[in-house]
Length: 389
Picture 1 (cartoon, rainbow, N blue to C red):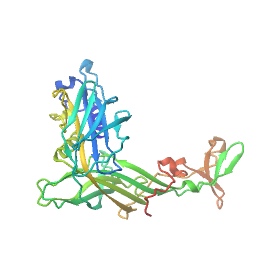
Picture 2: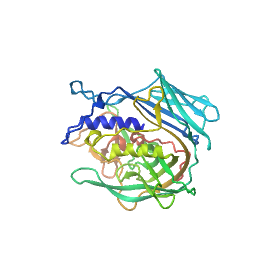
Picture 3: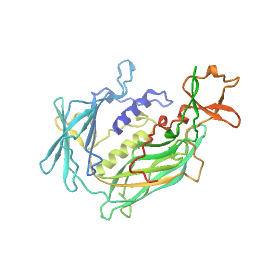
Picture 4: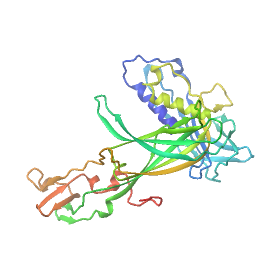
């Protein structure tokens, strides 16, 4: 949840020592505030979801103690209300998470929706937001990039992914992108035995554990808008960076991009969020400002609320990328270690160790378990039904 990451990030930064004298405003003493992140789309694979947390004050000035984090809010009554008169109550399925299960509904283009949350006598709500269709994604591409990963100048190369789109409407447009990736990888080591004293070595075949597909949701705030541009188009807006190190780019990589057509209010909320998280060294190293979304506490307008209710049309695109040719790519670092030697006698080898036998040289080797079982690296041996290979 982006808001949760935001709070955790701020708390972590404040806890660190710094050569900059932090500015500590009196607002650090205010009561716990509510953070809300809510989304309604016309994509059946993105059902309505609402996440609510109560932020613990970032700095409690008693004894200069720092209290990081936030607490999920459970037991709230959460409703999505449509301008056609229908109301949909969401269910508290996980800590701080509310989803529509009965009935499950999908937003419809042209209709407007609002959120209303009742909790501990307070009412939090937005105005009505209209669901506007999203134009098609024109292209997903990449550029080779090099990123500095340490202060001593160490860099990595990789792909910086890009997205382009346009809207034939004359009005300026705003977008947010939600990303997920699936990637295929395989292992090069063939196992011959498992060492099981006192029985010795038992034949073992890992051929069904050598090919895997990994998947991940890609974190980050990816937004762009056409305000101030001559044309209502986005050309190669930056998405995420994928490094040359790791299993992702070793064979074949599938990037799935969902494009949300959002309002200017939502766009600037996420821009401000990104600015606070990524563009400064910490919340209080510069003059702080309060994030303003489109949700208020209608029962107490003075109550602190940080929240956004997005009603968005969705379009999507998928692009496959083969192993890069522009730079070397390496997955998990597997090294063979000879065993049954004076340095590594059998008596020192753990039971269950996987063994490679070199018949020609009559030598025995082992390696990390992750080099013999691809599922230990987070993947699955079951090929996804959508995979195009």
